[in-house]
Image (cartoon, rainbow, N blue to C red; front, side):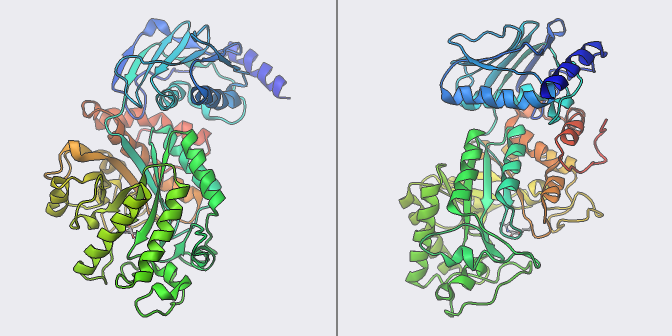
Length: 514
Ligand code: TNX
């Protein structure tokens, strides 16, 4: 049957008028350099082969490319090793030091003879593949064979990211999202060249990761969520699966254990951590700032060391996020002493500490990173921490928060940081957003999705799309390409891609969707 469908697609495709091809520059995030050659279009055919040079990781990118293209085209697209891969009517992926492309850059050349993609690393090839995917007609996103002429516009793209850290956060604590939902979010990140997934694993309403040394955290602390839902948690194997799936897509998982506040779920499991040593009943509301583990108890630091030790061991990436936000009931001196000690515990695991910018006032720890979620244009305390050596991930609440409503009538979401339509998520500059936080101190950007009001995969996608691509472009594209009108036009063509991929997106009225 697959064979028949393939044949039918081929014949009918040949009879069809060619669809309006995607222009070479219609890529999100915008590439650094685009040089179209209108005389050099290429058409992918049933005979096309993917040739790959390099190591297993490079070959794996070739396999992923073929797997992306097979369902809609119905073509076999075999993947072949070649010392010197040639387009030869298909696609060549070459792992080679092609100029100054860096760790994530790539060069893509489309000629009538095929597509040549070159990068110095498998990550660069993978990122180039995301561009290649966007250059094919939107129907490429279909999971079943489609009648189409698979044309790519001719010319060259040379591309590399502006910032090394480009991320999104999913709050799996307020509402739990199972492994398959998380994997799908990873796919969404990959499309837009985001390379970090921050998982907010713990909060007042639920503890979502199994910890062998403190088992009740997950079994008791994980059994609730906002509202009446059952909650849930990831086993160590679930978490390993998420990390491995992300790694295949060159995405680093950043696990967050929020401390010392946002810990009510941990206290329900282990009353010994609570200031009064009494385990409270579960909390399934949406208030913040009321809970904390006792910073004056040695037992608390044993807990922190055990938990962070296990998470570090399960996590190949360099980061451990310790939260640090909204610990309103812990006095400043006790808070600073606690965070400094936890920073040392993280250093002891070999990881680099990340925290919400509330940790800025405490002593510097080697390499530490502050995730800034402010809404003003200045923050002297964060600027001072930067002078003392901190780097910053920008998640401004009034631009990058994916849980804010698009408009007053958006059915889910918050508005404490204002309404965030697409233009608001797009129109700011991470390199010059906070006074006295220079671009050199900015590691990158991250778009957090808090889930107090977000309960399903479809609702996650509704809040992510179309704003996630806007944040992705701020993290990836050189500032010289920044242009609202151009972004709007480039993004419009992605609507049909999302529809074909079954992504439930918000049809922002600002975009001329086709
Ligand atoms: C503030 S942003 C929080 C979260 C909430 C969010 C809702 C931050 C570090 N803390 O606990 O979920 O607002 O928008």
